[in-house]
Image (cartoon, rainbow, N blue to C red; front, side, top):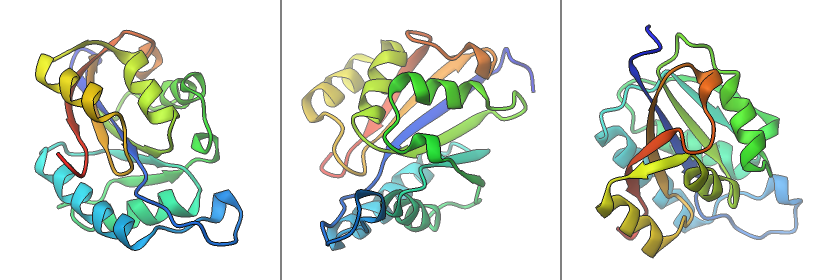
Amino acid sequence: MSVAEPRRIVLFRHAKADWPQVTDHERPLADRGRMDAAEAGRRLADTGVPFDQALCSTSARTRETWKLAVQEFPHRPKTVYEERIYEASPGELIAVLNETPDDLRNVLVIGHNPGMEALTEILAGSAEDEVRERINRRGFPTSAFAVLTFTGSWKDVEPGRAALVDYWAPTD
């Protein structure tokens, strides 16, 4: 694939988690989270984006979110479980994206806040007005996702480089 072709990054926050007596990393999804994860999967499938790879945090709630969401996809992308996504800063998330091979066009990242929301804000040098208004109004609740596009190599992902083209949250 040419680096001149548009690429997509979808930043997907895990679904609503429960609070049992386990470590934060091992928290499972709440019942509402399971429903929202499946709905987010349907909405992601509806975007028509053919994902080449999913990068998923190793936490229990992100793995469970991804397991439920991907069942709604017509094609399951390669999944990489990446420890660095758990509690990652925007800079750490950009470093992970910079390692993506250039033969991949569309990548989905399943992670946590505040990282997903902050990375969306940092990467989006531009945005469609309606999309920007929705994300400003809603924030980045659990199960929300943002779709960003950019042109170039994955090594070129940096602040202001992408356009925010779509956003969805469970109550939209």
